[in-house]
Image (cartoon, rainbow, N blue to C red; front, side):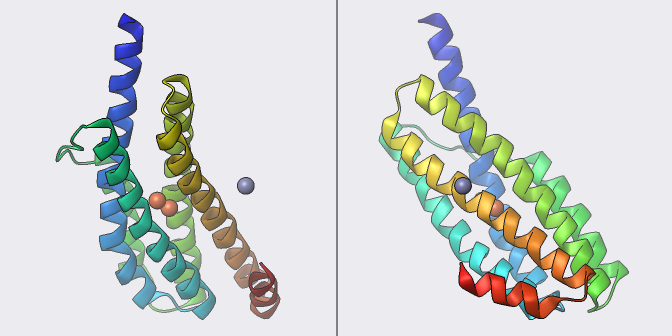
Length: 172
Ligand code: FE
Ligand code: ZN
Ligand code: FE
């Protein structure tokens, strides 16, 4: 029982961090979309921006159901990841190099989210939070797909096979 309470507070801490992280991502993505050289990359980022807005709503739904507040804490980790990514914007102008740098940064963000949502899912399951688990799994799946799409766009740029990447992107 005592441990259960601790597990729940860890669960809430992870969710609160993600709640702020997602909001930071929503603020940062439009800038990256505008700067991206590849239309494929801009499209992948735009799709994920739309998903991210829904992810924030999912987290709000979870907090509401648990009867807790997300609080106003900053995700310092996301702050760092995003500011590192934004440095690339100053270093490269619209170019394939910029796109590769943007994708490298964006994939770090996705992997952070994958780790955090993975832990959150495990805790939701352990705590018997079935509704939360379902919502968190939906988001986890979107993060995974976003990560895979970014890797595919990078591969297309690096192999000079942007059109091929576009084709396979449309099939899915
Ligand atoms: Fe996300
Ligand atoms: Zn999957
Ligand atoms: Fe994401």
